[in-house]
Length: 367
Image (cartoon, rainbow, N blue to C red; front, side, top):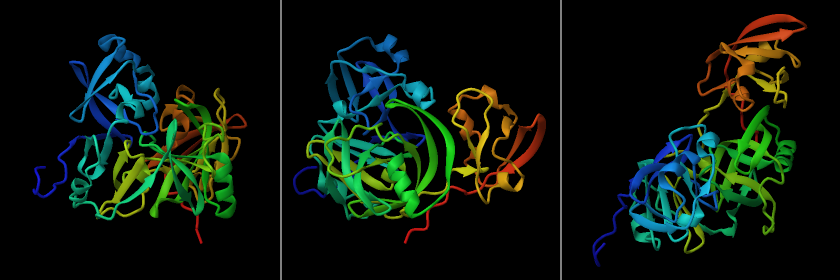
């Protein structure tokens, strides 16, 4: 503002969410606006092939958040397929944003870009606590910040494009040995960095610069998935939207810093959103698809579902018709005590059971 006028919290531009990921409008030349995911975990920006026919091969003038950025090219990348959505046409990464301090204000569903971070304006945002912390990041293709997972120190990748946490299997095995908790098997995951089989579990607490968020639902990833060679401590996985949305967050690219300020009235814990019937699946692409695991305390356990049972149908859907990605999610719901009719095959006999979803992805009991 003008000299002497009090700072005010920026009005910003609309920010929506797709499975937790921040989505912003981007104009490409005079075409659009197109919804793009802003992904701090993407070094390069990309567009879905379906958009290429409309906007051509570049160079491009992008307009977003009231700013204009020239880029020579945009990577072609099956965005819609990876995000399982027809509503998003591209991904905005660091190569477009590196000239700005980018602020995401999840609580007001706004974002804005500044050539230099305006600290007075950020402090005027009274829905945040006004007790910001900032931490220098290491840029190695991705943005890494130091932190702790359940007290284990290491580095996180700042990843606004991650709906779920992701943690290397070896790190999770160490945390699991110290503080056991349920982990569901059989999550097949196609991602831009590679395709992998995962477990789905909960991490009790993630922490950066003393800012803790509890109950982060997380997938395991292979240890070599994210190259993190420059780091002087273990790579702990990603800081996903479940962590980042608790803060008025600024990725200050010119200063090489991440700034976070807790929201005044948001508890530092993620709500339960994944409720399971308690069945983990074998890691197999092709049918038959068998039960590999039955969680203790689950409806599946009470109804006598056994390891080795073949899953024929779930919720009326023929299980074979689902993709390997969809199958484990068909055994979860976003509501507790939802019912799921299941048909199983055991020694040639069909068995029909009706299972109930429960809050089984519980946190470990930390000391």
